[in-house]
Length: 105
Image (cartoon, rainbow, N blue to C red):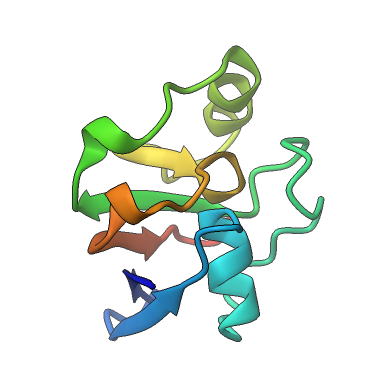
């Protein structure tokens, strides 16, 4: 299994075993991080699974869709590394991906 590094809002870093049949959001949620609300369950209709990509192979992450971009525009903590974790399929190519859970809106 590939590793996923999750940094919580207080700066604590956690390394989890990622399931490559799930999205980054599903891996974070299933690992018990309740800071990541993911209210829409991965339907790309909210921005409560917002993360900042801080490390790993960003070229292995699919391009952002227009819907994702629009939803991220509604957040207050958006930056150049912002993504919705529900829109990132986790794969072996993302082994070592480091994401920080965005500030709560």
